[in-house]
Image (cartoon, rainbow, N blue to C red; front, side):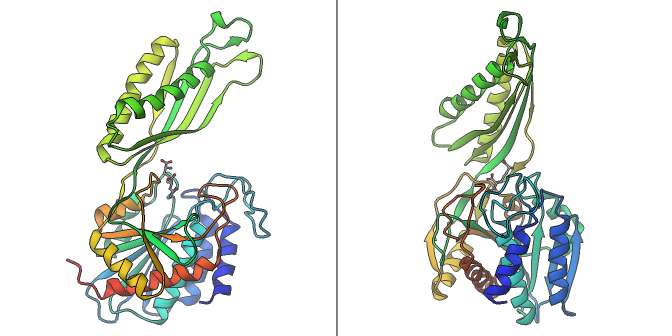
Length: 377
Ligand SMILES: CC(=O)N[C@@H](CCC[C@H](N)C(=O)O)C(=O)O
């Protein structure tokens, strides 16, 4: 598949971003492309809004997996692209349009150049939330074609095109979403003493949350709490009866997530008394860390260099990825693909360079080939 095909597919997919488990048009588009390539040695299964494709190996001893995520984000696009999202308030702002296109490109290669081993391509829904990897692993479809080794990539805006990056051990953090609903007594803006102001309560809570990280967790156990969204009140001259905070917790140690949650529960009790209110906490979806198997990262770095793709050792990052659950179940690794975007992941202006599509396909093909020649035990 050449660059113009890849570019067309990426642009088609870019226009139809859908949220987790709502990827109906995306699934339909992917299925159409897969059916166009399908031959009798290719099997396809639909699972929820995702797809599993297996290319039967010529002399299979194992199954090699490649996973790409397919959902978009609730972000209004501001790229100014002629092919911008046609779904209002939805955008492929995390590069999953790239991930899917690269998946289709590599799939096309292996359909025409069969490997010795079976190769399974997993088009997984809901990475951004509520999490598709865990239920996919638990599905019969996955169990039947369970890979012996697995890999996945993620675009990296800050890396140049032609570069990939990874590291042995921790690549991405443990995560938990965080939703907090405050309810108190609202009233007239001029009579604060007759009310329990939820704007004030929620604002103080945001500040206290930061103290959990700086004072409640071992400084050597890196942690992050970010509140990305805050809502309260209805009008400028009334005291708010309700407030809502939405955020995420990230930790380098799996155990630190539980510690942060315990501290949040303690804060809630104190705030309910101090601000005469109720606070309900919901921890949404939780992702296991992405922990790379050192053997495969070494094989990957050698393979990339042999194929003129620059490999750099990555730093661990506080991003989250439900691919961590797949790596908990199946040995493997994840890597970053350089796309040289001026704007970062989750930016409404994310503009990855499409020249990275071909490099991405090449990197997947060489990686799966290398894994096929590797003894996995
Ligand atoms: C690569 C990336 O950006 N992943 C997301 C995963 C989101 C997990 C969940 N919805 C949360 O916010 O905790 C990320 O934000 O890191």
